[in-house]
Image (tube, rainbow, N blue to C red; front, side, top):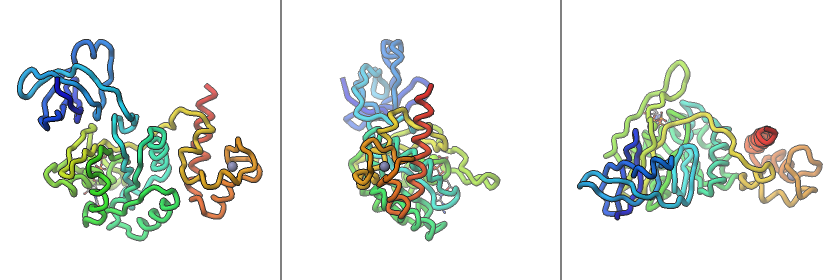
Length: 290
Ligand SMILES: Nc1nc2c(ncn2[C@@H]2O[C@H](COP(=O)(O)OP(=O)(O)OP(=O)(O)O)[C@@H](O)[C@H]2O)c(=O)[nH]1
Ligand SMILES: [Mg+2]
Ligand SMILES: [Zn+2]
């Protein structure tokens, strides 16, 4: 049997990139369908060929990572894309995606695309996220800014893009690999939002040897399940200040003498990050009550 990776799935058919770099169309072995096995793009599989272009997925290998949104298996890294403008950056969504990436054990990179449209705004965002410790890349699919830096992050690794519709995820891939000519869509004048041009997740081989997933944009993301006391660990920049909290069990909300709260008050932690932490904490606590 050959090994491969699912690069696209559609209506019960899966495109599998084999180790020999062939792409073949596969169905799932009936047994896997019966077991209700959910196959994701990124899943490593064993396939048997029925002919040169077709085969059957016989086995799904254990996943190393899993990201629920965008739904993808085995990626090492998430590039969270926001536009500097058109559409306006959605920082709470950006932080939600970063929290999900931390929870899944993935590396994350913040990409501010469309810097050409608002260079000053893009720089302010870079400044804000620099404090988090996440790498921040200022990019423009239009002018080519930052493409080299993105290329470096992607080389030889399996990565996914994530972010709202219309921020330029597909455009960035097209700028890196013009051969793909992925469909892109304009921004609706009335709502200032993207038009959900990309409809499904697909993993694309890069000339640098890596794989990058283009994904549909989304704007809603439920807070992950988890323990309220774990949330602080999903904000990596908080770690430097928790020793200044009076209580070891501090949730950094109402407690007296809280190092995190103090760091946010003086701007050592970005106030928006801290306020999103409080919002997520309330959401997790509310979920626990049911
Ligand atoms: N000015 C400017 N426009 C850009 C840039 N990148 C993309 N765009 C435009 O933004 C619009 C949306 O781009 P897409 O690549 O379709 O966005 P997407 O993130 O893939 O959107 P979905 O597939 O709907 O999730 C298109 O009109 C692009 O031409 C950029 O760097 N600068
Ligand atoms: Mg797209
Ligand atoms: Zn605290």
